[in-house]
Amino acid sequence: VTLHQGELVCLLGPNGAGKSTLLRTMAGLQARLHGRISLHGDDLTRLTPAQVARRLSIVLTERIDAGAMTAYGLVALGRHPYTNWAGQLSAEDEGVVRWALTAVGAADLAGRQLNTLSDGERQKVMIARALAQEPALILLDEPTAYLDLPRRVEIMRILRQLTRQEGRAILLSTHDLDLALRTADQLWLMAADGSLQTGAPEDLVLSGAFGCTFPSDEVTFDLQTGSFRLLEQPIGQVDLAGNGAGAFWTMRALERAGFAVEQGRNGAPVQVEVLNGDGRYRWRLNMNGQSQICLSLQALLDVLENKR
Image 1 (cartoon, rainbow, N blue to C red):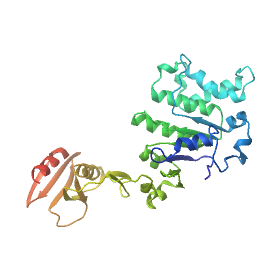
Image 2: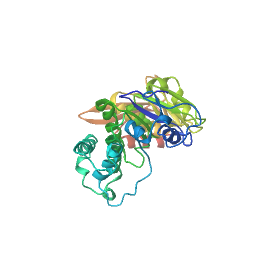
Image 3: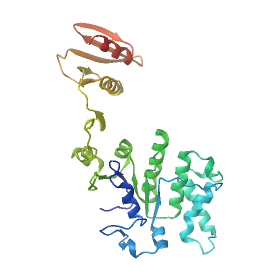
Image 4: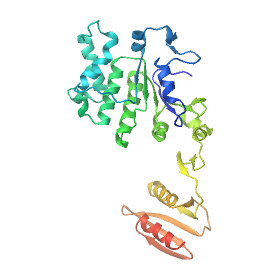
């Protein structure tokens, strides 16, 4: 497999497949069992630690207990491969540290102690530290773990921006499948047996490889929605008429309640039409020869539940 400059690649797979092991091996932190790892055509094992550190950086999941160290101080550690024996920062090094903090949107955190940062802020600083090494390749092991949804999206946006604007190659492992599908240029799918499939996210979805990477008797990957859904026997069928956001969320609500939803199925015993007038949604339910208007999705679900 090959990583190219300017690409954001997400490494996906079930727990225990070996994603972290692969990242550590690529970074030279673990000895490889077989094969060859090349950086710009050079065998990784033939490079000195300083040479490796100038070409790649890695951000692991382990939290660093840095005491009262500031964010600036941590990012400055990324300049270690370039400093003299005393570790003194030159004016150029100082400029790179400031640039790295700015690149990840963390310039305002420079003077903060690490133990006062939130998980999202700390992760941005860790990425800045990796960026301060000025590597061609950045490896990250689950960088969005423990973050809330807005922070996960922000971190992925930052990483994608670094590939686009700075030309870095970035490989990260993640369990956030939806974000990976939406943001990655390439996916590396690692199955439970350690085998690897690579390609554009959409190609891997359409070929069935994405769904097969996460086999389960309880969930299945839905090609139509690009998400996993529970495998349950439907409690009934509903024909849905409508479009746009109203129809999308109506379908979500009906499927969550256990109904199989189809669109354009004439003659279905239960029909729901999404109405949108004056900026308000309403739902017309036709069932058992009767028609009624529901003013909310909860009201619609309540009626369907009571009339089953």
